[in-house]
Image (cartoon, rainbow, N blue to C red; front, side, top):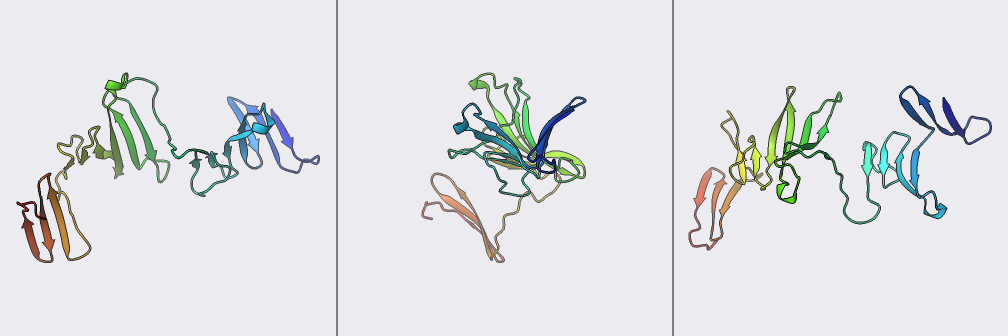
Length: 212
C-alpha cells in the first residue's frame, strides 16, 4: 500500500511517497528527504532536518560538510552547541555513554558518565567520567575522571589528583622529550624543584630559596 508522488506525467522522473507494510511505515525518496516546520506561514518555512541521498542525517545544515560523518548536527545561530544523551529515570547507578564501533558493529571503546548519586536534587548530582577500551575481546575501564577532578589511570579510585596503577607492569609512567634534556618540575606556593635527565646525567635540584 503506497502513495507515490512524481514530478512528471510520464512516471519516469524523480519520485517520493510513503507506504504501509506489516508493522512498518515506509518513507520513499528518490533523493534527499527533508522535514520542515512553520508550514502555516509560507514565508516562515524552515528546514528542521534532512536525510541526504547517501543516508547522512543533517540537522541545522542542508548539505554535508564531511563525507564520512553519518550524523551532522549544527546550531544555526549562537556560539554554543551540545548533544545530550541521558536517562529520564532517577537512579544513583545511572549511566549515559557513547560506544565507538570501528568494525563489525562491535564496540571497541566507550565513554560513560556514571552517576554517583541519584540526581533527584541539586545537592545529589555527582558523576564520574569514565573511558573504556577493548583488548582481546574484553572491554574494561582504563581512565576515570572523578567528580572532584582527580584522574585515575588503571584504577577506579584515584588517591591523588593523578594516580597511575600499572598493575603487574613495573614501569608506571615514562616522561620523555625529543632532545637531550627532560625535566619534571615539582612546585608548591613557595618554591619549585626539579628532576632533570640531561644526556647521561641525572640532576635533582631543590629550590630552597625560591630563586628559580
